Image (spheres, rainbow, N blue to C red):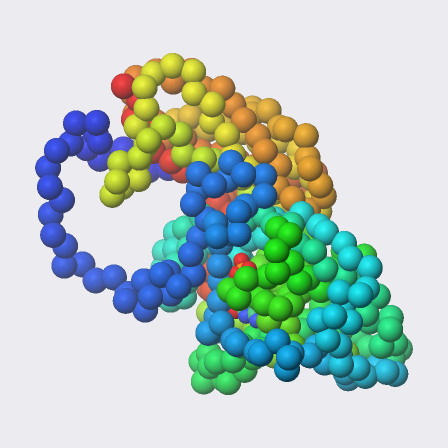
Length: 367
Ligand SMILES: Nc1nc2c(c(=O)[nH]1)N[C@H]1C(S)=C(S)[C@@H](COP(=O)(O)O)O[C@H]1N2
Ligand SMILES: [Mo]
């Protein structure tokens, strides 16, 4: 983290100077629509619905309840149309899942791709209730030729001149695994409109883009899905213009709840000297467990303790008791998973701003 050259927020009383520097109105508009979690809400094991982050590419679509059907077609023996009641009559399952937007951290890259300028806050954990996708696909009976399944939402818009509904696909094997859900409830309530009412896909361990909301169509394919968000949108590209590789699992990450109280504008933290619990959450992708979290205090790394994990796909709480003494600090946290993956200190640049799991830094003044 950069050296501190900023005024002490305990004593700084000057009015901020007016600025003429440009900000991109388009980025601010997207940021006002797509709220992030409030970092203090990381204290909840399950994120209350209104505090879960939100990422909608287009408008929230409206479909009247009595007209809603899920179409399941393509290379299947029995194409079908399912009502919400048909789906709810099937065996239900609830999974606690941490979901993070693949673009989380994009706003911290330089140069950055003009899109949703997330800093750290595009993450949340919810309890999703639905039925296993696997069972529904078995009902429809996939052809042997099927290699992937596409999931298409009811929302529609344009991106770079291409009109499309938001859609993503999963490889056959993943679509037939036990943990992928067709979910109708979030934290025990029907999905709210902004989170996909009446039905969404839940792909535990993946970045958010796989969790297609307002699901209206499932298509079994014998060739790769060519939808915009699959073939063009969510791909890692070390340089613009390259074909890139698809974004799939979440990368390992930890976030801390900023300690003390904030300065309004900078959100730097102020606190009194003494024992201070620094705590937060850590998660990785694909159900890989977290093995270590460290807290950085002015660049010196100390081991935090991990609370017991709740479940395979949910974030894990960690804590560290800091004996805070008067001074200025850069706090950071860093997680390592069971594959030995850890977080870089500086962001890895990506053309679309995907997968930035660099450590979070928080500035703290102690008196
Ligand atoms: N139909 C549809 N599904 C979608 C999206 C979308 O714009 N349309 N956004 C995706 C992205 S990029 C993310 S990060 C998650 C966000 O889910 P949430 O808004 O419920 O947190 O939904 C995914 N599913
Ligand atoms: Mo996302």
